[in-house]
Image (cartoon, rainbow over all chains, first blue to last red; front, side):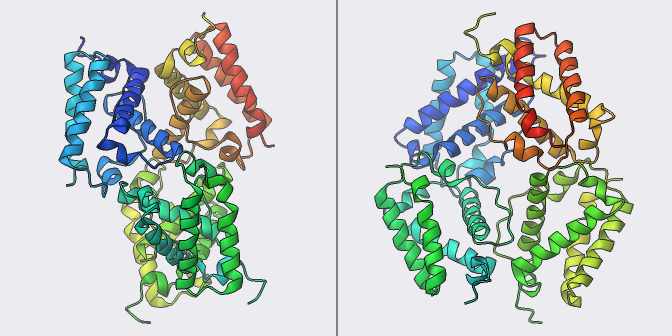
Length: 124
Length: 124
Length: 124
Length: 124
């Protein structure tokens, strides 16, 4: 692993990050606890949201992408996301990283980024 | 009632239409059947959506407003909105129009517009 | 003038503010110095921008409108707006307020708001 | 070249398309004739527009990207883009494709796509 490469490159670039985002959202939507957040929404709204997740991950990992979505606090405020929701999400984040066999260093960086957003997302 | 005035003016303009939209969404969110569509969403997303409803109503009724939201088909596709959902919505539309004592001619125009979107919204 | 009414109401509400915004942008577009900012842009982009100006003015004056546009600093960064541009704009703001015969108290409030954004807009 | 691969893949994926879009917009902005379209605009607006160009190219070439921007007709209407503007653009498209040494088959596909949008973009 070259430290000179961005996390975006080390993760495999746009397509790899897109695959990770779709895999993760698929797991979350199928989750008994988390599924409620997508249960009654339209496909255009969900696809836009998945795209914004891809865009955010590419942007923060150093990819050539201009993120124009809302910040995490604004987009999650009022959803009443709990610690139990967060724990369920992190379980799926790990399952997704297992699925793609992401190496330890990149895995730690992704998990670290996700954890860094927790304070802006968990409300109750 | 002057037929020369736009429906927007006859309804009382922006503030009246904003009040109608907020009243209607409030009833729909509190409805046992319809509430699921808003149950686990964030406040920013909901407020944006209510604003787009106001914008759409002002625009189609002839008000000075440029609508930039999605069309009804795109924004509702995949929500699996049923005939029963639609019936519940129309009940609330009528309750909202009662609440604001909207006169018969304007009431018919509003109900007619809402009914005109049904084919693009009801899926199951 | 009742101090209990919002500036939005005292200005005449949405339609009055929409008319003010359209009048002001019309003057700015026709201005020899300022016209360059709109000279080669498409109509959809310009209409969206005028709508965002209406939305911002309604929102900050206390109207029932949820503003989802960018902040003034982000939306003007890099335009190289000068003090001479600002002076030309303020001339048109005053001409627009003259045109609609806006009373002194409301006029002072509008001019005060516009002046409060100057530091975020003027760059050179 | 495998015909089973999408054009997106054959072009080199997201990063290659992002580099192509930035290179092309850079040439267009520096062009004596075309530069007027970007001359007095803010950096956030320009970066959003370049990102939408990347998104559009990735989407139409088969990449894993959900395009949420406006259609070409809506976004260019009123810009008064001429045949001479178009000719200048096509010159830069070819220079960009030269720069990245895009192979003949992919080059023909890109040029073909750009040409297919001409009727929606050129107005005068």
